[in-house]
Image (cartoon, rainbow, N blue to C red; front, side, top):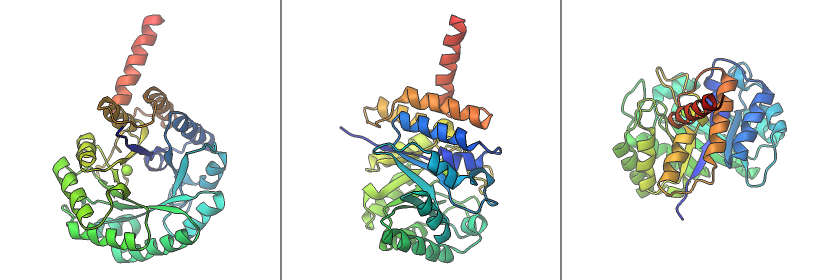
Length: 306
Ligand code: MG
């Protein structure tokens, strides 16, 4: 049977981009509900300096509170070696590191050149490999940059080569501002695979800013990609990309793939209930399409029985 895996980013990429700070207990409950729905890969937090991202200042405490469930992998974003060491100390064995394919975006987001970021990522990968830690490398703005517009294929290819040499396990291609289109996604995946990136090592991190996330996911699926990032109810965006909002919603991905007979291992009702819980935590209506439809149907049913 054909299947895909969902990598849930809401506790990190979602909450980091919400204005309010959610309690550690609330986050732990949200993650427990995601796990109960069948999600096996969850990026739970980021080990950055607390003053950079106050929403995620409780990283180590949160990791300690998470349920240990067989087959479930908790991932943490680490900006550098110090972050990696803090993640390791907290008991995390799966980390994500990041840089941008666009020089300007990298500079604005990370205050470094791409070259400096690559050296930093390679240092993280070196330590991680020694410690037996699994690493995903995010490359953002692969399908377009809010400052530079088109991002040449060669930028991405050069970074992918370096990441592979340094021993990265997964390369997550990020459509940070939702500028990608299905043809571009299909072509980029095909070219990267032709240049030596094994397709099973590719993950797609899509944004639905312009309504193209699902179409882009299916285009990648048709080229063999089986790993997709999603954020429950569509929580989060990117604060450094003007106008960018809306990670691909996990429910939309699960609904669409399951409807096509492609197995996700996730209970859509349980995931949707987790999305409603997450919405309650952040205190604003979240934009996921399946989320809104599922919630509306439940509210109508409740008002009929009331
Ligand atoms: Mg995102």
